[in-house]
Amino acid sequence: QEKVQQSPESLIVPEGAMSSLNCTFSNSASQSIWWYQQHPGKGPEALISIFSNGNKKEGRLTVYLNRASLHVSLHIRDSQPSDSAVYLCAESNYNVLYFGSGTKLTVEP
Amino acid sequence: EAAVTQSPRSKVAVTGGKVTLSCHQTNNHDYMYWYRQDTGHGLRLIHYSYVADSTEKGDIPDGYKASRPSQENFSLILELASLSQTAVYFCASSGGNERLFFGHGTKLSVL
Image 1: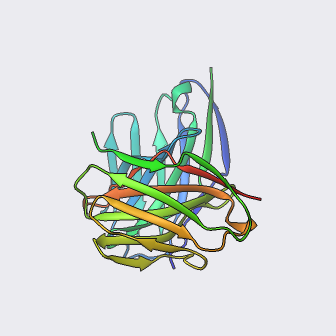
Image 2: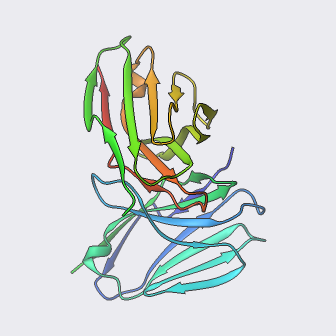
């Protein structure tokens, strides 16, 4: 059974600031690490994934992966109120994803 | 756009009763999943399937059965519903690239 831990549980940032979310996973051989966004009353939606050590940038999102330390982080540049949601980290193992409990992000105008 | 439809959107069931949650996808995806979400626990995998007529157990399969009669349909069955199964249930599908497409969820209350 995979085990994914996320921190912090909740995060409040002002509009325009950088939001930084953290995740530790259990298996250095996991295939990919995913970040999903979930708005209230909706199903999660995939945001970004990373497979190789290092960083990956897509728009305002940057993900850093360090397999040796089993750590991945998500950074949202120029955070907007519309980014307010729960962010779920997941590690994959042959097309099966195991999720953490999430970080609730609130971006205040 | 990928579409995963769950029914019902919400349900109230009695303890000991039988509950069936249904999921239909129009994505032509081979993989389908059932997760439950509880406050503070994130998403936990109940059952999944990678081909019709076959299902696999996830992390928390006890008290649940799954059925995949076709590529498009995947059901979750609670034979004897219990209070502890009150949760929001999400169905998802994937084409094998690990990107999951989720439905809107089914809110189940067992009284």
